[in-house]
Length: 207
Ligand code: AP5
Ligand code: ZN
Image 1 (cartoon, rainbow, N blue to C red):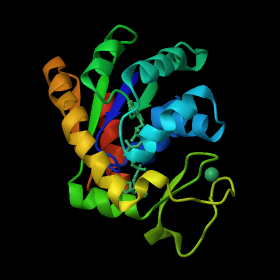
Image 2 (cartoon, rainbow, N blue to C red):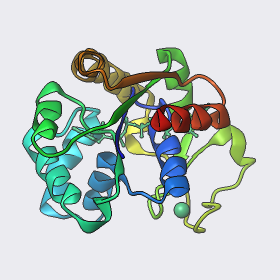
Image 3 (cartoon, helix red, strand yellow):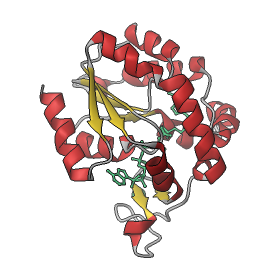
Image 4 (cartoon, protein in one colour):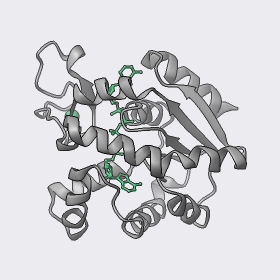
């Protein structure tokens, strides 16, 4: 089953994609994670993406579409995948139509004030992609999954979070309508607790 996780920054796409992918043994394809890895390794794509990401802006469509096209051609995508953070613009969604058949689009719906609180307290592991919130870490500074030091993403600074939310409302929110019209959209209240959201996503994926 090929699934898209749609939703604003901080809605919980990464958190839930990781859980669902572990449960179903399918790959999580996070364009944000792919770009951050490229930045860390200073590849040409990483160097190109850096200034956009740090300003809270979207990386140009052509760059992202090429990344996704290459990734979806790999063998581990044969039995389904979750696209986490792609598509984010109408041109990306239109390009995806020519690359893959999407079965379900899960839209995690969360109000802006809650998103700001989540992102400003988020800590991430750049090694394995795990995500935490300071309110649950009890002072712990290392990743519970792999032991790497946790960091605060540069784009989780207060000012950049607001820029990302604006970009979401202007460029990505129109995709809700796009997929509603295609009949694949399932909206889930992303303000619920993580376990309830997890079960709701599994339920809509089973149809
Ligand atoms: P990306 O990495 O995709 O960032 P994002 O969409 O802004 O999403 P986030 O990772 O911030 O949030 P999330 O929804 O995954 O939430 P999370 O699970 O971490 O993209 C980064 C940048 O890369 C973009 O700004 C852009 O520049 C570029 N980019 C990426 N894809 C692109 C594309 N397709 N086109 C162009 N550019 C692209 O949760 C957030 C926090 O909340 C965590 O602390 C978590 O613990 C907590 N939390 C999660 N669920 C709950 C819950 N139910 N209750 C309470 N707390 C919760
Ligand atoms: Zn880790």
